[in-house]
Image (cartoon, rainbow, N blue to C red; front, side, top):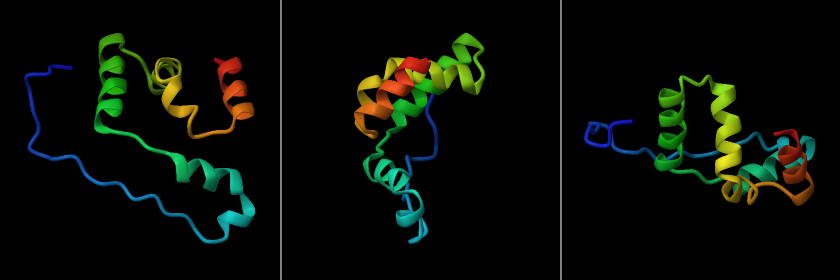
Length: 88
């Protein structure tokens, strides 16, 4: 990704909302979403990887999960984090 180019569009705030019934149906998802945080920089890193490596979305996701383990492991419990790491 060319760092000298810019965009006319500023970063946007993203709101995460769920149906109130989700708390009963999938509390682990609500827990993850309550902890989820990201940034334009993290998104840009994944997009740059995809462009540079000619990677598809799945390949970029695997790269991102490996590269940013310290970020996403804060969103899930230790058991889930270990399962994800083992599957990589």
